[in-house]
View: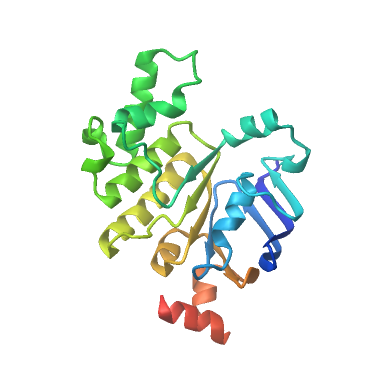
Amino acid sequence: METTVVDIEHLNKSFGNKEVLKDINLKLEKGENLVILGKSGSGKSVLIKCLVGLIEMDAGKIVLLGKNIADLKEHEFNLLRKKVGFLFQSAALYDSMTVRENLAFPLRDQKAKSAEEKEALIIEALKNVGLAEAIDKMPSELSGGMRKRIGLARTLILKPEIILYDEPTTGLDPITSKEISELILEIQKKYNSASIIITHDVECARITANRMIIIKDGTAYATGTFEELSASKDIWVSSFFKQG
């Protein structure tokens, strides 16, 4: 049985004269948390934006859930994207909508579901992130950590096969960052989801990663488990962990 859900080969992306990604290769397996670790500006977020077509790659091949995205027509790619959840850095909630309305938004095309079924999905998603009581709040009434959790609930509501986390702990205090990292782990265990977690937060990587790739200057500089990489004798890799 095929277990590879993402297969990226020789991915390159430049903006003008600046090479951001240089011959990136990676695979993501079903049920795996793959952490892409790197310093700000190293190309981490560009990588997952190429994966879902938010940014067009210059060269390379991306196979997503068994489909080469270069071969897909726009409507085919849009259908495939529905199987991929994307948690943005900012959580990207609609400020003019309540939490309930934010979570209902991804369900708007599911005309076969009744209002009661949609409400049940919203409540289930909020319970998954521990915020059922926030259902009628506005985003402005939520803390940064709560906004991240609601963003994750909205991502989960369509039960994606793959979840992409873009800097999930950025801007959060250490305690809340740990809570979000542990929640990512809980979601993986509950849904057997495959996830790519983009971060520069070493503690988030320690908690969530089954496997890691460290990006340096747009290249996949090192790969391994957290334990393997944190014990590396490579000067740059080891100094990265000490700074974390």
